[in-house]
Image (cartoon, rainbow, N blue to C red; front, top):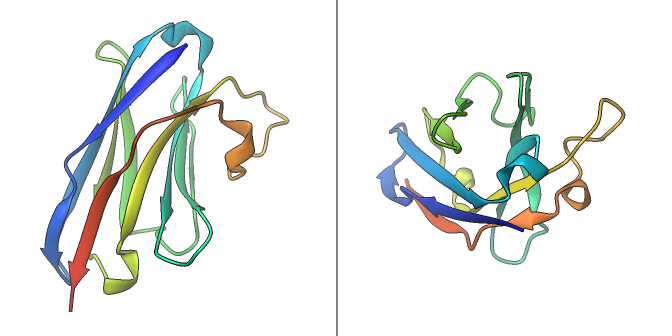
Length: 125
């Protein structure tokens, strides 16, 4: 089992920046990729970004150029730096981890076996 704990959410004005973190513990060797998803009220949970063990990254088109995902393997922590935030970025942000392959769809939430409890990000206009 892998446990994931998010932190760093909060309230920010449009155009501002925020960084959320996700600390993994437990059998972290069973997961080789980590990702961020988000869910706004009344909407499906959607892919935001993902990063592999070797540092390959994937982004949703809606956040490309504004968000950056990174990881510190020594700390088993993944970060999501969010810049130029927009009100439509408001959502609960979830960290996810899983053992994915080169044939996996990193944007598919069902590829990830482990999930955090989520952290709220609110962007005011």
